[in-house]
Length: 439
Image (cartoon, rainbow, N blue to C red; front, side, top):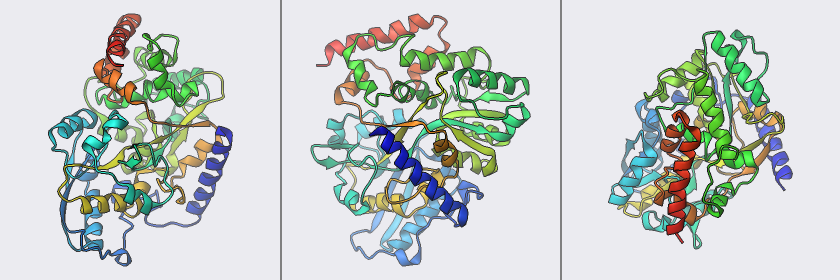
């Protein structure tokens, strides 16, 4: 089934890319900086729903799109469609995963927000309004039941992505690298060449914290080939080992740090600056999702200079890659304007242009992705592993253990620990104690 799924997706992506190359439109022309691409809503899409009126607050992790005015353009298009809407206020949170959970607990998370990663399925109804009606209107969706419980859907995926090595072709050429790495040894060798050419080989964004999830709970499932890998942690008191998927991922990142292949200032949050470094060729690589590609282009890179291939986590030459949901839109249970909130979610998915701007595979399966770099990725023929939600118990044990999965804080400590084994032992102790308490 996985091979069939991979083939179908590759055909879908390739056909869409040929279509995108054949014509340029405002929403698919990646030669435009992402921040200046206009929403796709038009006069013809004006709504007539009298219940969609008033104002809402949208809480988001995309502070960049607030700062550059992109969300303001979406708001104007939304208000044009729904004349009864008086305002959409935007509130950006930089340390989103951590801070928004606090806001949810206090009932101050706005009307629409991105659902934090580690809220258990059984708890979704405590914080969010069911959006089955919106899901039905949007049609056949990826990850439709990912944020659902007892027949109720609480989240609509904002975009679909895969994870891989995003690289600057000009930086590679300057360092004498003729093709992207296909094995882990080649990755290290290319990093050494980039370093020798005065180029920062790879930004791991240690100081921003959240990108470090790549080296743990993002990488481990698809490296293992088991979409339910995180749930297998519940079967052991020692899920963190040097020689298992967690340990292997951590070791790659630790090696990058030890050899000086990463950003010099580890402790500062240089996330926004790093995009400019990659775009200009002062830095060579990211290990992130395809969603970051248009952000690099928006930071000044030429689209044709940005490449994207599967991440070479070992030397087998046969690589897995994930098919992942990005954040899910949720409507706050405490919202006083749920009709507008739901209309905003539907608008963001199918009309705003956010999906195209972000370089996502569209949530609606009938729509084709516009991102050209996905062609290079699929030509490498990775085995795609479709993500599944973790169990409620996994979330409960992680929370009880105070391990901030998908937040990156615990990985920060592991990556710079002088005693790697001791840092894993500490995590295992926390996990074991929590596992014994959560039945």
